[in-house]
Image 1 (cartoon, rainbow, N blue to C red):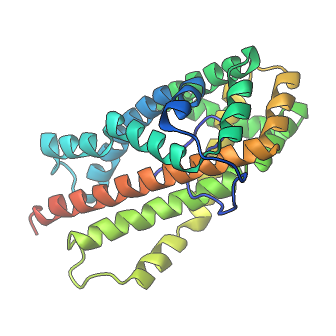
Image 2 (image 1 turned 180 degrees about the vertical axis):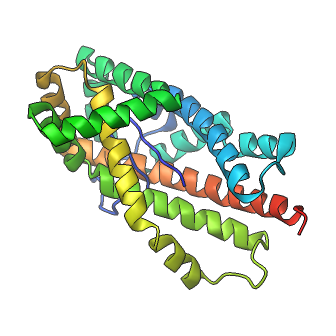
Length: 278
């Protein structure tokens, strides 16, 4: 129900592995890394994606029954100021100083800035459904033909567990949405946690297929102008202890943020479903 993608980490749901044992960093120290990674721009794009996703929820669950009130509820759930605040706070809680320093060194370099600019530009371009459809078709053709660039992108995806993490994140978000629906009494007889889990897990094959297609379409679009040397360097950073720890911190930050958003959307949707005529 939600698809997230960020520079370096394209997923929710962190792998629970201890980060480097050192002093945690202050919020002020995190701010530089947040800016270097283009996360404020990513959050704003996610806000736009969220508004579009809200329209999908309305079409599927209460067609024509949302109107301005529903759009306002969705905009409140995807408040970019609140999202940015949560992201920074959660990263400050989990990022050690050494990881911030190493990450800033990479993303603050000419190469890192070029990578971030390409990632943000591609993410913004994919807001257009036509561009997304074209990117998916192009990625599918490239993957069928194979070649060095596809192999490099596959190595990057594997190094960061992008498909598995995105799938886990989407399922977590779907579960939170069901929890919100249940809390809002959208189900006449209620829905147990076991029933929710069974329902969500049943979506896994479809989610995985769609996620893999989207991840590769995004990566191949974003990194098309990037040299093999630059992409190799990005893979190498991703495989370092700092790169892996940064991934985990971002997973944790976005997992908490989007699980809350999904639950709020489910609760709001339940209210609008209740107002629909039988």
